[in-house]
Image (cartoon, rainbow, N blue to C red; front, side):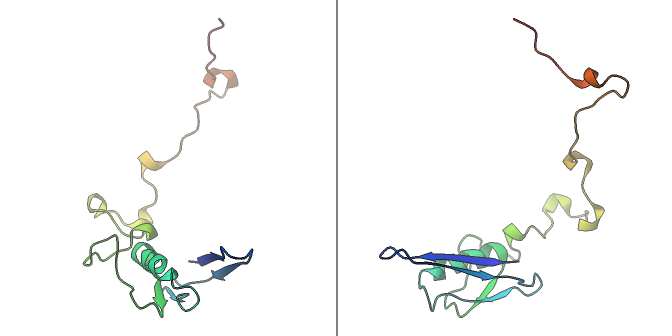
Length: 119
């Protein structure tokens, strides 16, 4: 996982990009940028709520979109939905999720091409 801050100033042409790379998925922790920019508090709360990244130093790290008793993090997509309770992630892609290309007959490659009638 990775956290990227883009900070800029309205009063000068200065900007700063902070990249925190290699955050563990098992224990996602990152230093907070609230000491540098107090407006980061709200955005770090959002990242915590959606991805589960713990920003060390943020005073108000709690859920804002999901209910407080929700145990997962929606944008990580590493949880099973209620209708998929019997399906493990190791089972791969379901047949309905597989991408299919256009069917082409081996003897006649033009057979799979539809042409619009000439007007």
